[in-house]
Length: 191
Image 1 (cartoon, one colour):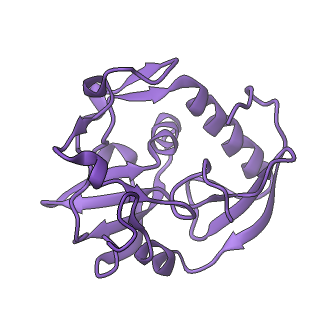
Image 2 (tube, rainbow, N blue to C red):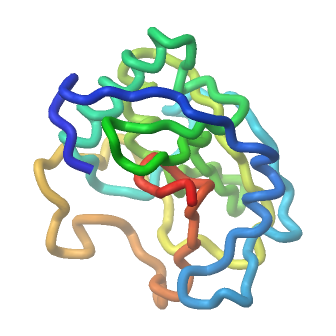
C-alpha cells in the first residue's frame, strides 16, 4: 500500500468475528490441504513487544510510518490498533476494505515469536504500548523462519534483495508459509 504519512483517510466499516475459528482455517500457502493451526492452542494475549522474539532482520520505514499514522487516526475514532480484542474491517481512502486483526505470535520450544505483525509490534514497542496478539501453540507445521533478537533488526527503505538479510529461513521455508488472508494484517483484503 502506498500512503504518504498522514495523507490518507481511514474509517472502520465493520468487525471481524471469531478470530480463533478463522485462524484454525489457515492453510499453508502452497498446500491448501494442510491446516497448521487446526489443532493448536490459540489465545488472545497481551504482551510487551520486547518480551517476544521477531522473525525478521528488517522493518520498512514506510510501513512503520503508515502504522504510526493509522494508529493515530483510528485512536481518534476510539480504536487502539495495539489493543484489539476483535478484528476491524477498515477502509483506506476509497480502496477495498481490509481486515486489521491482532498480530500472530507462534510458540516453538517455549519461545514466543511474531510471525505476522512485525511493524505493529515495532511501533507499539517504540511508544511503550503493550500489544494484543493471537498466540498459537503447538502448530502442526514449524514456522518458516527462526526467531531472532530485536537488536538484529534494521530499518530499511526497501526490502533487502538477499534472503540472509531478510530472515533466518528454515530449510524448505517456502513450503512452510502460512496463507494468512483475513487473519494477518492490514495488507490483506477482507474478501
